[in-house]
Amino acid sequence: MTFEVKIPPAGEGITEVMVQRWEKQVGEQVQAGEVLLQVESDKATVAVESEQGGWLLRRLAAEGEVVPVGAAVAVLSDSP
Image (tube, rainbow, N blue to C red; front, side):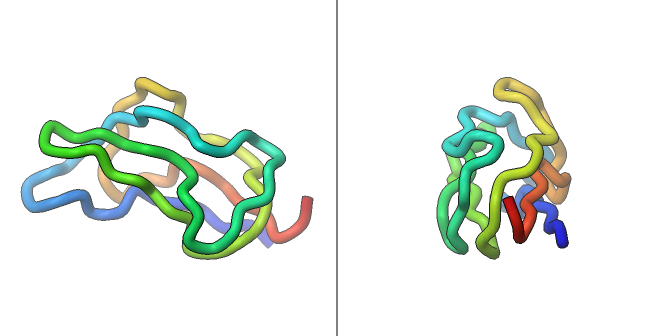
């Protein structure tokens, strides 16, 4: 089974963020609550945590890419 990681709301009036840095590599195991990536808005840098554990199957956004709030940026799998 797979699970999408989405960009959470980053503050009032913020509609998009830039992927600043990935903290996990494809294939790595991720625990629930662990930081997957850092994103940056015009107001702050925010850590995006995984809501559940699994393995990072795919990244859907590259470092430096601007994505809308609510967009899926990664896919986790419950098996390696």
